[in-house]
Image (tube, rainbow, N blue to C red):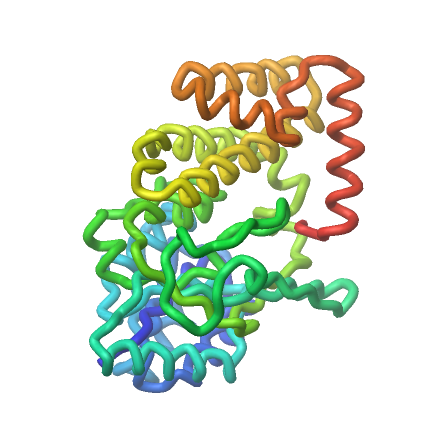
Length: 340
């Protein structure tokens, strides 16, 4: 019995992937580790994956594919997962070993009681390598702890709080049943991963465990500000995928709190994309920002109004003063929250 399938997408990850793998291996035979070598060419990622698969044949699978991007690696993981639950761990990140044991014990309890929840949520920790500091992101003010609950029991999220890829552990069958497939050759698809399954998640369980360790510090990381601006078209693509994903009026019939959360999620993503377009600042970028807000209005005017009336709606402005104010607010938020 495999209780968790860990998918580790790897692309030229030789310098750090072994640390990630070693932390996951502390789960022993209770876990399955799927190493997806996404067409690495610059180092020996493929050889490292094969070495581990040979050494731990009952735990590790090494899959080699043509380069398709992070989302393609996640898709491959879902396709090959046999564990009860599914968790993505990026190859430069790792997990806390004690927390892994606690999560596995909880899953075993669910299995024994024949009461598998659809999603388990844990904390994650920003690991800032340049300053050797940490910042824990938890949801203990939002979700009840150590009990099965539904989204209707959630309390108010802060502006800085969202369910992230780092926090979620999905019941694998949910992802297979909805045929979740992330777009290839696209960064920032973690937003799709945590947004699209939500209406299918009926039961959740929050553990106040600092489980996932999120590495921050590489210049080529996708969350690096300069990298995001170079890949802004991919951010636009992902934002539109979320806009198109659901009629939130229909979601509201299922759960008003869930619909509100999903609306806020889109609003934040609209703001983030708009801010980076404002920071790029040329005529083409500002036209893309204008087109994005028009796209939202044409697709869902009610959602457009919700986004416009939130503080994030400030980023829809076309005035120089307004865009300058947005950049100032972003600068302060980035300094306080340290999100990239």
